[in-house]
Amino acid sequence: MRVSAWTLIEMTFRKVKMMPLLALLVVGLSIALATVLVTRPIAMTGTIIATQNIQAYTDAGCTTVFTAWVLGDTVKRGDVLVKDVWLKNVGDADIKFSWNMAAALPTGVTMTATSPTGAWASTVTTSAKTPGEVIKATFTLTIGSTAPLGAMSYTLNLNGEE
Image 1 (cartoon, rainbow, N blue to C red):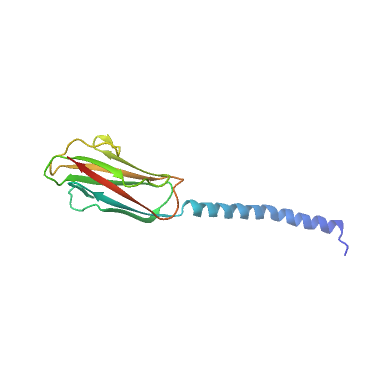
Image 2 (image 1 turned 30 degrees about the vertical axis):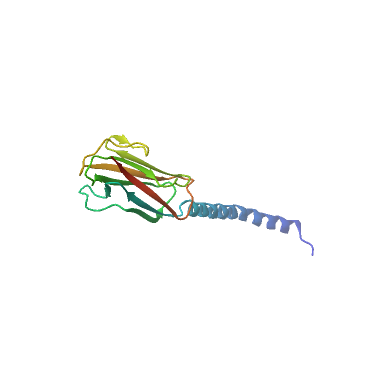
């Protein structure tokens, strides 16, 4: 079967007209897939352990004990989550408060804290607090762009030292 030059030109022209449409389709699908992968939720739960004459609360009146920071699967890369916590000396002696993570957080996930005096590093204790005294601390959990996808958990230790 012999095809004329004109038929070849027409066929090539039709293919060329379709190329921008195909390219647009490929780019659109790539963007949609990338968006789904980047915004995929991360299931996260934090256990809060208060030790040695300290109790953590979610309210300034110290009526609701803070034992877990359950975020479910609402967390995404790029999220910054902030939680105010009231720490109370429930013992009968002066104590200093400190905090630490029970284990290292995954790459790309960080926890920081502030106290009434400013940034509160996990290696620093507060000044002595008398029995019944309360301080407000703010914990910030940052989910970076390199955080692993999927379920994550952590344990935040809140400590009291005489």
